[in-house]
Length: 394
Image 1 (cartoon, one colour):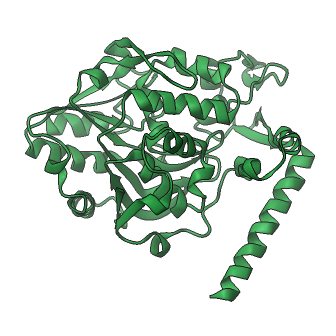
Image 2 (cartoon, rainbow, N blue to C red):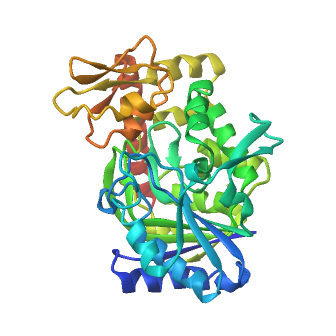
Image 3 (cartoon, rainbow, N blue to C red):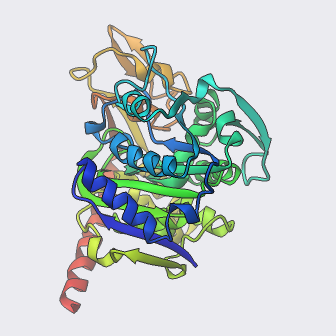
């Protein structure tokens, strides 16, 4: 049985984060029971491109990372922190504060695109080979530090999705182009997770992101830190807290199905706070979350509904700063510069949401077909009726 610890932490004050991180690990038996002293450890942060400051809630907060690093240093570990980020500036870690934190602690911080990638064979559902960053492969232990967020494509992003950053940007863009259905894309994410399963996952849920995450959603103060040796189990617990059914999340479902962790809460021991005591009933999901009806409908009907729920990104010209980050990242060449602003060609768009994810100015908005809005309305109505019914039973 897997274990997940849940600890309250009301904000990012250093002393509060330090105590909460230590408590979350002590509930699991202590860090020394998971990570061998003097080992080589790679710490995978969640640092989306282009870089952003921690107060925007897009990245793993550096203050949480700092407390994990201090505990690793107490074990005399050789620590490397990293992610694959793209930035216009020479050092993409300055804006997030990671450079300052790691320099202060004397910890090696690397942009994975500068360290090299090695080909790894994988017996995956989608991938048969993949390129993994060298520091990940060189490490004795992997520590994964995801952020609690919704996602406008995969619905939820956590421990499994965070490991996508250990492969080169070019392949990440290519896979968005090749695997345009959430179900297949999520299988691919689990293939990568299979190649580098973290030994410890600590999730930053102090301030989460709801709605159209992972970068354009709204901040949600949730005041939690979760930790587990099983990243799949942690995703299951975190998604339940956020109001999802864990096995409705494809990455959790497929990882559980393939024996990479427990996605069924019945096989997970919750330590510390109980899920029912910290669950967030008003946590807003992406408008695509209604697509989780998939397993309850005949294939033909689901296909029709899924088509109606497809989102089409459009650029709000009044918000566009012409930074053209969306143009750079678009794997299909649908995003272009036109008349001094970004523009998305609907005929070429593959609905991967990369442009929406990369825009830091909320200039890329998501449009839904009229019938899709009706379906979503019925789904929301049904959810409200169910909530009222359950409330009356209590």
